[in-house]
Image 1: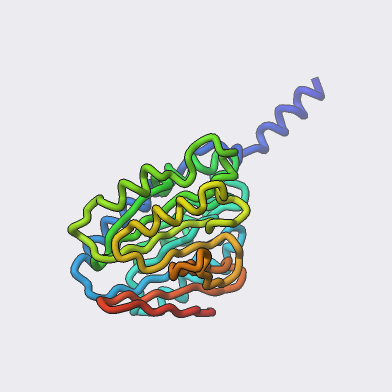
Image 2: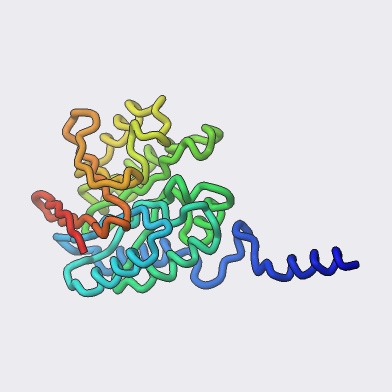
Amino acid sequence: MIASCILLSSCELIEYHPYDVKITGEKDCNAKNIEKIEALYKDNTTIRFVVMGDSQRWYDETYDFVKAINQRDDIDFVIHGGDLSDFGATKEFIWQRDIMNRLGVPYVALIGNHDCLGTGEETFKAIYGEDNFSFIAGRVKFVCLNTNALEYDYSRPVPDFEFIEAETDARADEYDKTVICMHAAPYSDVFNNNVVKYFQYAVKQHKGLQFCTVAHDHRVTTTDIFDDGVIYYGSTCMKDRCYLIFTINADNYEYEVVYY
């Protein structure tokens, strides 16, 4: 009898299972913010956006990042390069969403390799949407990809070449330039490095390719991975209190590293 009471008391202490995928609050954030981005910046000849990533477990630093962005008046939108969570736990995504939703500008979030752990992919899709998506701002198309192949044990096509190839023609009359965004870069530990050369070939088929953005490595990087002129810009983790700003206009683009 005593043992039964102890067991019951222990169970009552558990408020939720970390992987229960019970989502409270806003869902489908990417689609909602993409609608805002496309409406606000459709006709802009210049766009200025922030790229950051790897905010897992660094909640205070991410909160300070949001405050820093909100103090500026020159940012159009933010791209989170993935790894909102550390263990793929539902609460991690909710906490990060609630911090990022304080931004005064729209943002989109990519899926990172840590976001694929446990039931993380299911939670990511509920809160943010599909793991491959695109949007257009100021005649620049942003193609956002899941490149975290290792987390799927190669059980599904990651990266998804059907999606990548379809995006080369989709809405072609609405944009002139392309930016490819992903969490893990080619040749990283979680990328499917059996397909790196075809991946780069597919990427380069996109109209007016400007550059690629990555995260994952927790350091700022500027790398011409394939020595072909396509630069991969890497953002560091929020622990380093740093983000990247890109400005794209009709003629060129500029890149800046900002510490806050």
